[in-house]
Length: 239
Image (cartoon, rainbow, N blue to C red):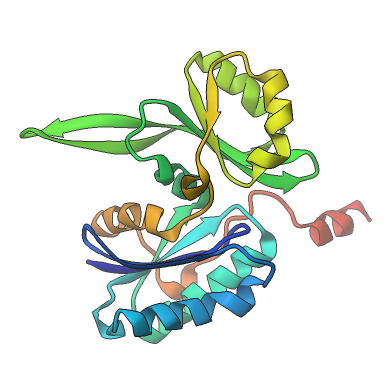
C-alpha cells in the first residue's frame, strides 16, 4: 500500500510518501513561512523527485488534530483536495499518537507535549506493547491517557502517578522544561532533535495499519479535531 502523509498541526510542515515498509521520500521544514506557503510546494517537489505516479496512491494520511487551528485547517484542506482529486480515502491520525510514533519501540513512557497556549498543553501518555510472532518482534502503540488539553502540572502529576521513566517530546518541551524540572518526581528525559517534532514519516506506518483495518473516511467527510474552542469562539461565547 502506498500512502501520502501530511502534518501541519504544529510548527513543522511535513510530507512523506511511504509504500508498505519503505519510506520513499520525506520533506520536513520548520521555518518562519506559513504552512500555506510551504505544504503544497513541498509535496510537489517530493512528487517530482521520486517520480510519483499519483494514480498508484491508496490513501492520504493526515494529522487530524489537535494543534494549531490555522495549521490544522491548511492540512485538512490540502488532504481533502488531494483525496477528492485522486478519489482515495483519508486516514485520520490523532496528532499526539503521531508524535508518539517518533519513539517506536521504547520501553519508556512517551509523553508528547504541544504548547496549546493559555497555560495548557495538548498531551497524552503512551507506551509500546512488545509482541512476538514466529520469532519476529514488533511493537504496538497503546494510549494510557488519550490526547487531551490540560495544564503542564496535571500531566506531570499523571506521569508521576505511573511511577515509570518518561520521555517528553514536542514543541511544548522548551516552553515547559523548567516547570517539568520542578514537578517531576520520576526519571525523565527529552527526545533528541530528530525525534522531537511532528514527522509525517513517523505516523505513516500507523496510517497503513489503519487503512488495512478499514479505519478511514471519505475525503468529503474529514474534519479536524480541535479539542477545544478557538479564541474567536471563546470570545463569542463570553459575550
